[in-house]
Amino acid sequence: MRPIEKHFFERDCRVCARELIGSVFYRGETSGRVVETEAYSEINDEACHTFFRPSARQFVEENDAGTAYVYMNYGRYWLTNVLCVDRVSGERGFVLLRALEPLEGIEIMKRRRNMERPTDLCSGPGKLSMAMGIGKSDHGTSLISSQEHGFHFEEPETKRRVVADRRVGISKAKEFKWRFLEPGNPHVSVPFGKVKP
DNA sequence: AAGAAGATCAAT
DNA sequence: TTGATCTTCTTG
Image 1: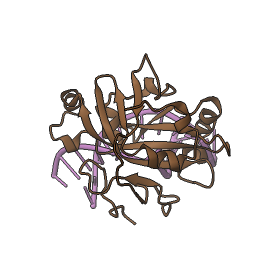
Image 2: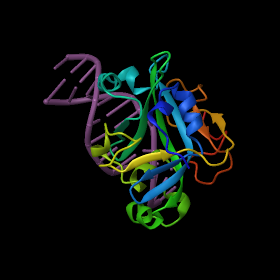
Image 3: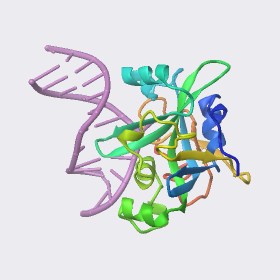
């Protein structure tokens, strides 16, 4: 397998989100295959944080492609995103990491999650961040090559099937099919076609 | 200073 | 279906 470099994330966030499916995400002793992502764009996307959070607009100004955008949601869970910067258009966006198929460090994940079943470990953006030990201190660090924080991705070895579906848990721009997942994979948060209308 | 909304999760 | 729980932003 080949490490994913910065230029991977210097493309449209929807392309990055789709192409990330099947790659492997590493953090320290833990790793998992990416089986579900979502794209958020600073252009015409009312669900993107840049649309309603000044701090997010500042973040995209000050950081490079491949940087982690980590924030707390509902007062309980950290959510992990990768910053994308299209090298052609300049358009910025995020890939939300929504689900992994756990590969390595499964015992560590079980401990962090206080859960046993493999499908309970990384089947959602909050669960995934908890299982990988991602939190506030990882905000603003590189997910491409971070010695300190131990993050990187590797390219898929084999092609995966990918389908596009509506995004989960949002109230604006609900119609955009910017969620990408491997259909039938038991580790996704919400199966294909099952997002509430 | 106070209120509202929010890219979730697990128990009921 | 619901409650937990807190950060960010807006309004007064």
